[in-house]
Image (cartoon, rainbow, N blue to C red; front, side):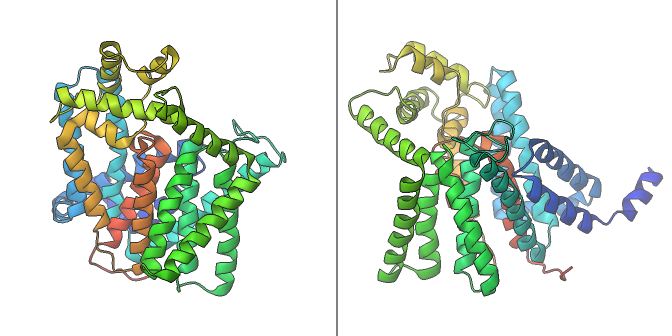
Amino acid sequence: MNHFMRIKDKINFDKFYLYATLLFAFTLPLSRAAVSFFIITLPIIFILEGNFRNKVKRIWSNKPLQAILLFLVFNLLSLLWTEDYSDAQNVVRLYGYWLVIFALALSIHKNDIQKIITFFLYGMLLSELIAYGVFFELWSFKHATINNPSPFMFWIDYSVFTAFTSILLLSRLFSNNYLKKEKILMFLFFLSTTGNLFLGLGRTGQVALIVAIVVMIILYLKINFKSILITLALLLSIYGAGFILSDTFKTRVNSAVHDIENIKNNNYDSSWGIRVVYWIITYDILKENPLLGVGIGDYEQTIKVFLEKKNYPISESTQKFISEHHAHNQFLMVIIQTGFIGLLLMLNVIYQLYTLKIENDELKKLSLLFLTIFFVSSMAEPLWLKQFPLALFVLLIGLFVAANQTKIYPAK
């Protein structure tokens, strides 16, 4: 024990957290193995550092961290009424990622946050260079293809990453904190990132970016005639160019229109139609399990039961798909798993994050833009149950809560 304490006393925890988080941010868009490594390492160091009484006090005195803790505890309690522990184990493992939020929130210095976010941009730049290389047939890379050049993750997840990167760069272009030559590079990066967003199949990020652009213009310019014109000009130029230049985006738009027409005719055998059916099934599940839900492990099993009980207007192939997958919506997943109580706890987390006080105006705006991208995207995918988006969430929420801490540390 004395030997361990001597080693511990020699560790500069501040430097470790900084360098580890810089590497985490850089490798986040690039490596699943790196994500797993830092998700495990950061909480372990946080525990080895000790000083638990002070940490518990700081966590409980911070409303966003308190809300997150209550949400996690209630999800763990739902194991008491869960029957399928194999699925529950996977959900618990993913909720374990949230420990990183506590580690970063209490350990990262305020004036290191922008540097860490910039390192994330470097990682995204490298991933985009690889994606464009695949698109222009300069090289092949893993499972990326010309029609879907997402190099490291599933295209829906990558669309969330590229949408956030686009709005991050756009917000920096609107900020007064950067030099003209820096903004020129940012603008070029913004063009390449937004172009990359429209090369892939992921409509989730494309839709979320629309909402985020509207929010960003309101944050920077308020609501007036000028801001409305700028918003329309941005949306028309970005999405108009995407429709004209990207055959993939044009195909996906036409597919969405076709799906909506089918839904109007009670045909739900499509990507959008399946999501409508999930809403209907969730409503039926909620009528029988309103307060507590079915537990974090029983969602797939319960959906199968209701597919057998009810005569939903879908084909056998669609029914099979629905029975083998999640509900394609994080809000619906929380309601199914933990009922109205879980949903209220989730909404409390969102409220506390949106109302988080951050002195740095640029970081505050960025926190609102990230939350918009993430939770709009969560309407189409359960991002808390997917490794890459969840890792992005815990990294950025940890940083934003760290920006809320009262102590200002000297610059490194």
